[in-house]
Image: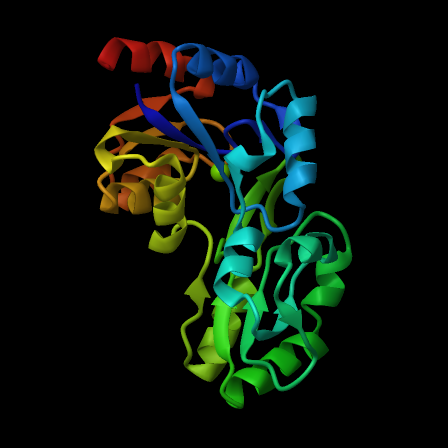
Amino acid sequence: MACILLDVDGVLHVSGEPIPGAAEAVTLLRRQGHTLRFVTNNSTRLRTVLAEELRALGVELDEEEIQTTPRAAARELAGKRVFALVMAAIVPDLEGVDLVGHHADAVLLGGCDETLEPNQVFSYMNLGRAFEELQMGADFYCLHKNKWWQTSRGQMLDAGAFVAGLEYVTGIDATVLGKPSPAYLAAALDELDAEPELTWMVTDDVEADVRSAQLFGMRTALVRTGKFRPETLESSGLVPEIVLSSLAQFPDWLERVL
Ligand SMILES: [Mg+2]
């Protein structure tokens, strides 16, 4: 039996629209006896809410099976004074982190959503404050450094743009807490007690997920849904073990190769 890390956005749904056959594939993988973990860089919703939303799409799961970046941040930054530019909805998942406006030990940048909130969170004033804290010696963390994500309206600019902007002006590289950081994948493997060579990463993201999973010695399946673009796969120089039309094809394929 294998351990399977399932990316969420672009693999199970796009902007909340279910990808046909994805929920059934999750059920099938469980029936085949595999252990699942949902690995997401979603940085706009609480884990409980994510679990509810996935259940509403027909995906069977326990909340504990979802690994999110705000919880990775809470582990890493527990007890520290943190100036955080994140969506308000995820603040409860940062339990144990001391959120402050000045004299921070660390600056944390989070993700964007499709509402007007990123306008306020990443305002000139707030980015300027983050800049000042970094200049005064705060450590720099981000939930992820994604450039864009796929929505039903097309590509939307993600928070990686603001992370890169602050890196540019301060000369400080941010520590990435979500995918593709090794710490994030290591935590997922740890909790599953899994061997990388018996673990699959199923994702629509060749650059972030396939690259990092392969560095870990995991096996990779790329799906042609969500943010998948043939030219990105080509220019990446990466070769996933299999490229499938969608997650719906994965259980049958896995059954054949195991
Ligand atoms: Mg994805």
